Image (cartoon, rainbow, N blue to C red; front, side, top):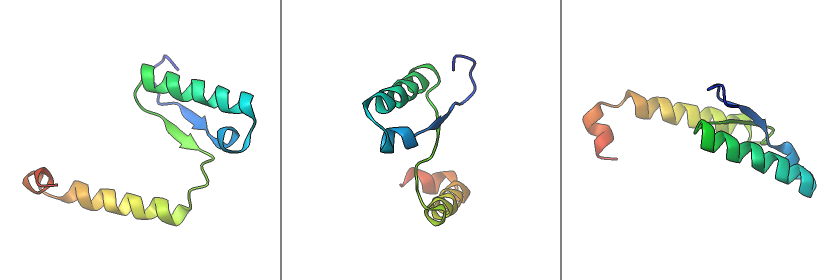
Length: 72
């Protein structure tokens, strides 16, 4: 992970696995946060419709003028 590339972390083992699985994923998340500050999570079971809604909301916010964003 130390190469500056945003890591893709499979979180399903944390959600559905045993203690060792949870610890392994936790170490990956910790390392990504400490070394890069960003991560991408897969295996989260978040419905695709919710993800699409969040992207739409983000696009709407980003399209606002700077002064409007400062009021939020």
